[in-house]
Length: 70
Image 1 (tube, one colour):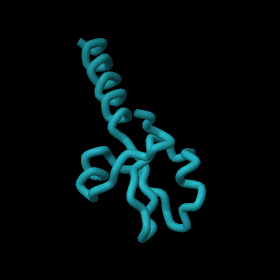
Image 2: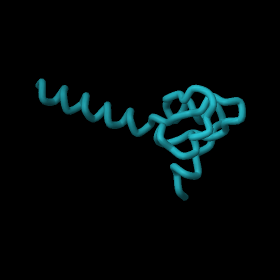
Image 3: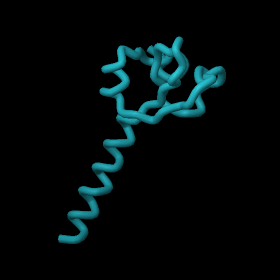
Image 4: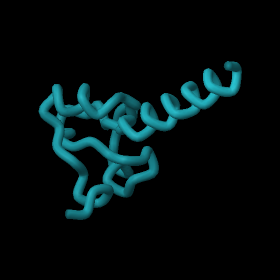
């Protein structure tokens, strides 16, 4: 039973991490980033915020061109 709970916990941690994105809180910011080391965040003059993907989309942010190659 303990192994099952541990397995579920690890799975949930992995899922949550996939949804985490990073935002620059600057007034001109319009995108979200996959990592907090993205070159698109180099010029961020304000705090970099970790949030989930749905919250970033709720703020009308789009995917960063450096992080997400389509």
